[in-house]
Image (cartoon, rainbow, N blue to C red):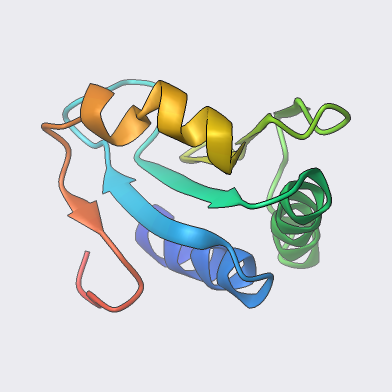
Length: 117
């Protein structure tokens, strides 16, 4: 799979756990950190952990290397580094505070409803 296929696959895994306001940012040419960001949130710590574990399991099932996963125990902002894709799973309050979509406002933003990346 290429990074575009990975981001869609992983976004669907998060969506299956009812991730809220799920967006994908195409970071190619904007940041050297990753080709894509997934940003979403849960309304509770348990939901943030469930979304994060769904992303981890989906990646592991396809043999995708998880370089790092941070913040799971606190479940306020979980960062999952999957190489070309970095997932940010926020608690709703933290997402409102950090507003990553605005920080990376020059990146093309997609949702699962907008199929082409």
